[in-house]
Image 1: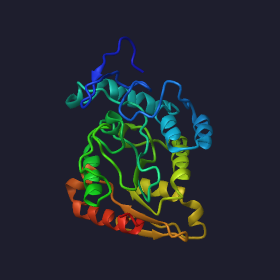
Image 2: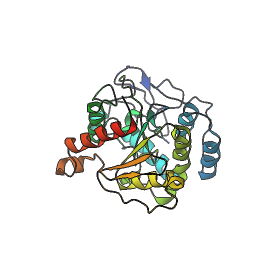
Image 3: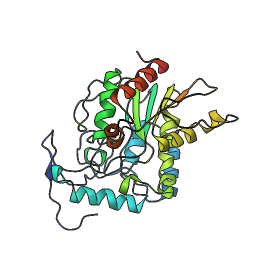
Length: 279
């Protein structure tokens, strides 16, 4: 945490001043938490709180104030204080990032973790960095969101039966959460899956780690099957009829090198929408 006086910064869209990182209940657009939201301080508390959550709103509130991983808490808040020069006059969310989109999605898009100057700044998953630019532009071309641009939590973006989430909810140093951090955070994703699974027909995993996280969520449905291997365009059909699709992560490197192209993203999400039965 920062020490000493905290300078408020104006939100780039609303102009409302906020501390950086943003305290719970301060009025940040879409903040699901209040000053009274329970805070998980260790892995056991994450497991207990996540296990008892009853709806997405309650889950999002508790996710957004979690402090269970000391290294991740220190890093996300350090970034929120130091910032990137281009965003030096903006407040950074500096807290964990919840899932975003429909509470009854037919399609779940799963990634690894927020970016330090993306979701950790804007307060919304895959928003404010180049990966998010590519992802939401593709989702828009597929008719899954109402705008190709995702820049902040007050930009009016709406979902069409899709939800976007990350397996790890805090921005990790070097984009690499440790195994312990992944395990500590997992109950939040488990709880989210428990609440949305009755509606989800298709899961799109962005990259190999998200694929492994999806396989863990789908373990019961995969019982007796050989675990499908990740690959771009791979489709695994489960006995329940649910489908898991693999997609390269829309990272700046993958897009710059041509390993992943906008046309390839379009193929994935057009197919995913059709398989999910989204109109």
